[in-house]
Length: 376
Image (cartoon, rainbow, N blue to C red; front, side, top):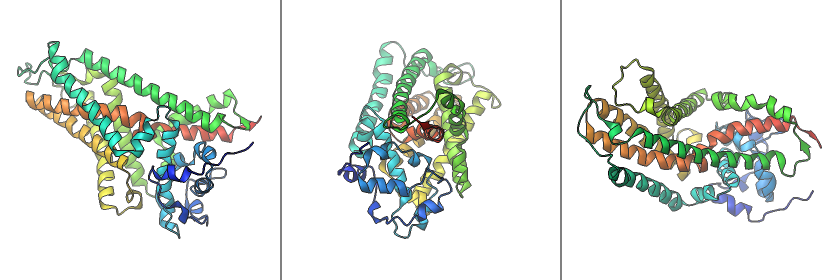
């Protein structure tokens, strides 16, 4: 089987933030130092070699970039300052674009203007919906308060309409992610493979997908356990908030002022804490640039952090203003919240930074499938 060389691969990869990877002279230090490297899945050195040789096909079928959690040990010990850790991060951006059949992921990662324009476009649609479209159907601002003194939020943002929009948005995002994951499976397991994986192996190893999504145990193998904890809080907080808003919106967006000990409020408080805890560490780490894993940031990293931070802060404002009977402040916070949340979900989840949440556990699952493959 012949493998085609792409002489322009280097120029394509540079667009995704890959630095001077030609500095690598394959001493093997990065592979030796990495606590996650194992037989058959050696990184980052193997990926650097594929890039240098222009082997685009084997690079796109690799899982190693997703198995890397960027502890930074490889970069700190590299004698040539080739920065293999950031290289793996950049490869994750590139691989995300190769799975995406729409081509939007590549546009968002390689063009600041393109991503920002789409964010502003969706934000404008949200604002127009609340200020023009919904009022035309009778859903307007009201200063009238509930019997408990809270804001009548549902008269401005009706649950049936918001819930229907949530489900439509969730279906769109799920369709895009699932189709991209199928392309990921095709590239890693199916395409040009000399081995086969039985259906029973697919079923038997599927638990790894669920386990790695929920716990991310490979992350805990890195020396710095604090970052694993921060990452887990951020991930779990976002997942809980997403499920509550999409699946249980009538329970979560209520005009009734629930007692502090109510499960609804505790779920909201935990999700808020998890998101803020992870965001504080990620943002201050990138500002200080003391830790190696925060020293090199792509534009997409900052866009994601800023949007998620604004979503959390405006969500907190909605809660405070609503239960304290401050209508206009509640409405302004709600519109701002949705104007940030909607483009973040529609862009970041299927096409950009947040898609890693899905690709990582699937990469672990596909790795296990490859280990159990047999010759055709």
